[in-house]
Structure formats: structure tokens, C-alpha cells
Length: 156
Image 1 (spheres, rainbow, N blue to C red):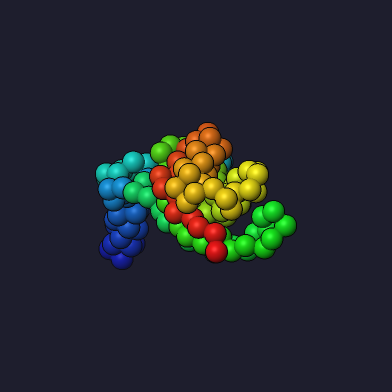
Image 2: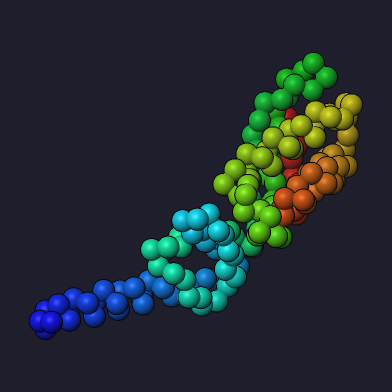
């Protein structure tokens, strides 16, 4: 073998070794997928992966997320504006992995449905309505590995 071939082979091996080490930051979980569909979850720390076979599919933050809500809804036959924020967090990354790409939309839709499911929600107090929405959302989302930590919505 020529020296150039040995050098090129050494560079390729060094690159593969460099790509096989993943550093996962605190407060984050990575989901890896292989070509055959097998998935695994990497928690914070340094991990060895199989380069070119496994790829990072999701970077799931565990510290919490904020979802702004600004929706027009009809309550008691009257169009109303629902504004505010929902705060949510991933508790179980393995279960949340299947829906993490569409989590904001799923939480928004479930919040609107929970608001519509109650008779006269416009007559509830601000705190009572938000506590009820939080409870309804958590009953609905906990099986998906997600929990709503705070609801701050108001009707305009």
C-alpha cells in the first residue's frame, strides 16, 4: 500500500471515530433511529453511536416548552378570542417520541376541545377555568409522556 492510501484510510477511520461520539447536553434527550427502524433514547452525557447507521431523529427538551395560544372560538353561539400561554414538559421521552414533532398542535387542539366541552366557560372565573383546562389536558396527555405544567388563558 502506498503512503497516500494509508493516510487516506487513517483519515477516514479518524473521521468515523469522531462521528461515533455524541455529547448530549443536560436537559435534553436524543432519539436515534437505525435503518431497520430500531430506536433508542440517549440521556444527557457522552455516548458512542454507530455512524452512518444511526441518526438523530429528535432532540427532546426536558426543561419545558411554551405554547402561545391566539385562537378564535365560538362559545355559547358567540365568537370569542382565546389568548394566552400553555406551558408543557416532557416526562417520558420514549412515549413522547411518537408525537413530539406535532406536540404544540396536539396540545392546542386539545385545549380548544376542553374549552368547548364545558357549558358556559365564559362565566367561569379565570383561575377555575385554567385549573380545569390543566386537569383535562393532563388527563388526556399523560399517557403520551407529556404534562401541562401551567395554563394562562383568558377569553377576550
